[in-house]
Image (cartoon, rainbow, N blue to C red):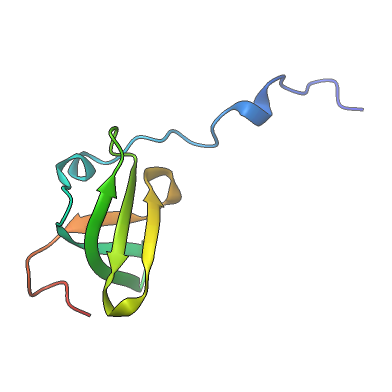
Amino acid sequence: MARSVKQGAANAPLRKATPDPHWKQLRQGDRVRVLLSPGFQASGVVDTITADHSAVWVHLDGGRGRVLLHCGDGVDILPCGETDCRD
């Protein structure tokens, strides 16, 4: 049996959930590029943003649906112009 188990560890966040400064500039209707991982990216339109800007709903282009992205997910959301975000 483990003796050095940290009490309450299951309730603690896995990593600090602080959005990058540019997430705070996002607004509903903005065109964005979502960088999922190296080599994987998608574009879309911001649908909804939480009050603390830690979570963003994005409608992906090409009928790929609506996705919820959290700042702790390891993804990045970058605003872009009208033409440079088309897949």
